[in-house]
Image (cartoon, rainbow, N blue to C red; front, side, top):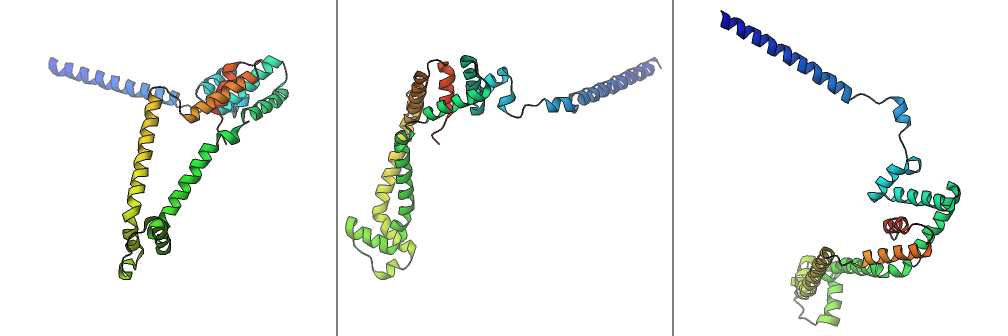
Length: 228
């Protein structure tokens, strides 16, 4: 009997502990998921312009462009002792200087885009369009022409054209693959590719152009600006 009474007491105690645990968990959950009051919602910043300096510096360290722009504007206000509107005018001048010379520095990119798009779309008629394949063969390949019955479909034309299209396409693909591998190894050992070099050079020139402002702030802003 004593044993049964002890078991009953233990079971009651466990049930009480479990109920208290559930109550505490539900209380904690309700507290953790409380809806924010209107005052908190109204204080939510909707742009970097209304953020405090600490939040701006945190976002700027995370490479957020708008934050770096706002940091530079406030730095201009501090150094020149001017209003926000006047600082925006100075910022626009700095932004224009930062974009000087982009026409020349972007020429390699534009040439690469033009060449790759031209080659990509030209590969289809050079492989499957019979008149184009005949013209290319006559002027650059001089291979034997199959019988008419073997050139009745685009796939048959492609099978013939592939005899001379495969070597250059395969070689170009392998060449580009090797260049990509070499670029990744350059990055691994810290050698800057062209894009990073140009951006770093542009940032240095901007800092030298405006020595009255902090060089780190100017460079961090410049490095975040794309070419377009």
